[in-house]
Length: 293
Image 1 (cartoon, rainbow, N blue to C red):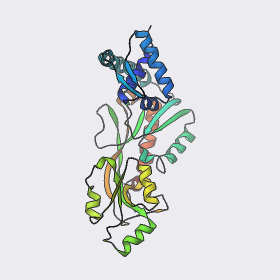
Image 2 (cartoon, helix red, strand yellow; image 1 turned 90 degrees about the horizontal axis):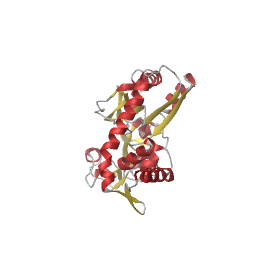
Image 3 (tube, rainbow, N blue to C red; image 1 turned 90 degrees about the vertical axis):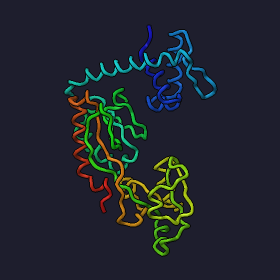
């Protein structure tokens, strides 16, 4: 008899595009993913992937099974959500996915206050840039930066992220002495391509050098060490003593910050309690999130 759990691993490899990413999404190691896929293939009597070193390429039969596997996944998740919908227990596991921009000074005090008040709820905090699938129960609640939440999620926008330009004290002094100095590099995202973002053109049009990175944490470290200046979320940088805003009063509004959960879990007690608690606490910190000075 086929084990449904093995199908979940198959789907996650398909969705993630690699065994390593699937393992991270499922909170297991790569060996576990490989073993589950191998067990499914043995049960079915066919190969679902061709292995070529670290690369896994889906086979023809694997491609044909995706739709059926997706339907099984949707049905299983809907079944589980309906079971949870009427749960009034303030205990058990609660998975919360958080945009990595919010994991430092913003979210941790909220988590600490919540677990003190509701010690029987086991929080699992997932800090990631990926948008986890709440319909598939990859998480129960999401704190997400977006301007258009999916229609199957309910929630509230608690603030709009404020962005400012940050640099080390040394660079700030350098720019104060020579505001049009084009020798100070700017730091931006790899995804910006070879064009200059609007914040550079608007505020530092004479900049002659631009560095790029894929990680917000690395961008912050680059700015801290004096490699250049970067536009980053205020809530992520205002508490870093080695960084200063340029100029001090400049703030640009960015993405909305939403607290979201699946519509089927709107009456589940532990989901509702945490969602309302998080909304209330974040709204109390709206000025900080939006970059008020």
